[in-house]
Length: 442
Ligand SMILES: [Zn+2]
Image (cartoon, rainbow, N blue to C red):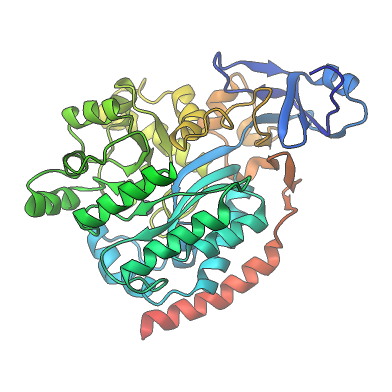
């Protein structure tokens, strides 16, 4: 756009665009105007072209799209390390559900702030969140400046947030109303899973998602127990159950999908279902290895998610990429599986497409929203550097992120958060941890 002014120029040693040709520009730069990317190219040329812009110049910097966490429960940071080394159903039913039943909006708000700090500091710029007290998750997210897809989790039993299920529909409707047209927050429809939601509830929520043109986010086929329960109740697998209810479509973001057959993979591909792959959570709960290599081969759009901090135990997407790339190699005894480029794509552009936002975020291209991060490569564990993409998956840590820009706004500069008061958030969490311990003892 000739004559347009840039507000911000970032330059670095590499610009990893993740565009269609996966172009990497050495000594690259990016010009941002308002909330959008104006131009990418030579850092030197952009600095000369837009002399009036604010600049962030990093001689050893790597600029890349912000990471997209396609499945998390941000507020579960308050349960980090509370119960480990247990199977999924026992972990959920004996440890997580009992304390979740006593959650309050304030605990959710502050615990979400904690994950927001952690996410920004480890390079995530957008995430998809399913939890209780979603209005408080959204309130915290709004303060942080992060981009998010947020839904209130619904299930058959009463919720500590809205009480009886019928109130859950009203609560969700209110969320849609409140965030309609919001620049950064998009509301989703979130049935917990097929084993906690009746067919009637699933159908009602399917109708709601269609009506609102919203994502339908659900834990699906997370482990063998879930498949067994579904088989006992409905005589079919979770994926087939959704198909039988006419709910398998392009709005579905299916979290986990660990136990799926070849036929189900083909069906999900045909129906346009997207998958959020949560490898570290699946490892920790010994749920299994989701066949994402075969899903990607079948044409399914796959993103990466950390799941909540109670089953991971962090929301660091760099750590998650490292796990994803390695586990699929050992699982298939194939070192070529989930190569670095494929894994990085899933954590950026793939994740954006999972959330229906491939036209807005996930790559650094003119016209897209300015969601990007800058890493500091001038460190022992990142030296030497032959292939930046290899480093991003196999050597980088979340703590290597220096700056973060979301929707054109600098939310972290030199590892200092600009939107959140990190030390206040940490201090508040110490108090909340004491409340959680009391809730557990009651
Ligand atoms: Zn989950």
